[in-house]
Image (tube, one colour):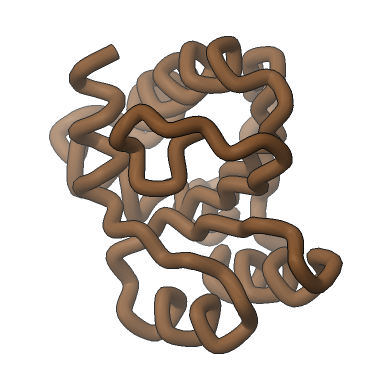
Length: 138
């Protein structure tokens, strides 16, 4: 998985994606279900090219009326929904802080607060547009 999505692969990197932050910027005219499906399809292709990396996508459960059933995660992509009453932002920060010191972590978001908090916790924030551009080239 590329840390800047420019093509360089960093073994063992954990890429944490702020799901709706990415999809609403890239596929905002689609339904939430279609947004998720499109993002997961693209991430599945990336995961297939970098199997030594880990990809986690976090979606806000509050953005859907009921927790989606049967969200098909492609091989190599873990899908999480925030807990009821919690934003995906909080789950992303929790995931970053749970990583062992020294493990490369990339957080894909254009949310300034999530990016800043992630950076302070040792992760490298990457704007949503960078991932969207990478997925468009795939």
